[in-house]
Structure formats: structure tokens, C-alpha cells
Image 1 (cartoon, one colour):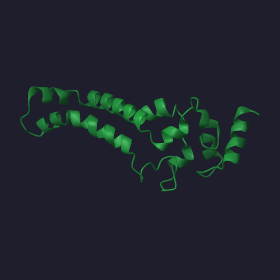
Image 2: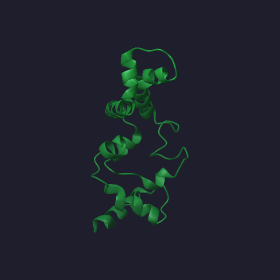
Image 3: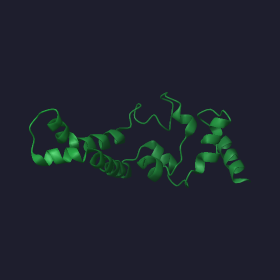
Image 4: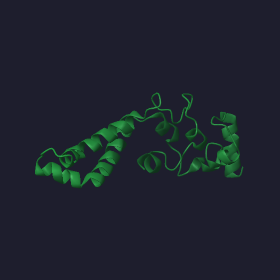
Length: 139
């Protein structure tokens, strides 16, 4: 949710979502791993791990048990905040590609849904992108 609403502002490179190859410049990240996401995941889940350990039979303090009760809310909010901070400090390439775009600006271009409907390949040249953007704007 954080990347979609805050960083990309609804802009997805839709054809690239279906390209699992290392040449995918939008969603391949670091050899296929989004390191920023894993950092946020580990921090968020780590907070409630004590509550989980209690459920499998290990005796823990009451504070740990109560953290376990807040599991979903705590991991969601902590993960979101950590992901936001990590991407402000160390953004991945897709955050950089969508920086400065308006809300769902790519939707009408060959990078968005229009590109999928037209059967456009994952990568469109800059000239083709400019033409599609002019068409989308009605120029």
C-alpha cells in the first residue's frame, strides 16, 4: 500500500509487472529481491515474534504476550513506517522512476493499462513514450 499510494502515486508500469526477467528495469530490484521491503518486514514481524513464541508454548513476559495480541495492527503500521523511512533514505529504482509523476499519470500511456490493452511490449522507446503521452493529453 505504501509504495502504491505514497511513492508511485498510483503509477504502475503494468507491462513490466508480467516480466520476471533480469532485464525488467522497473520491478527486478536487486537481483529480483526488494531489499527495502525485507528490511521493513523483518523489523515489523520481529516486534510480534515474542507473542508468537508464547503461542507455541515458550514462557514469555506478559508484555510479549500483549504484543502478540496486537500482531496485525502492530506489524502493518510498523512495516509501513519502516518501509517509508527506508525508501526516503535509500529508494529503489522504481521510486526514482515515478518521482514527480501525478496521480495515475501513466495509466493512459504505453506504460500503463493502455499499453497492456494495445499489446505493447514491456519496454517502450523514449520517442514512443513521448508520442503516447501526447496522445493521452490530446495534443
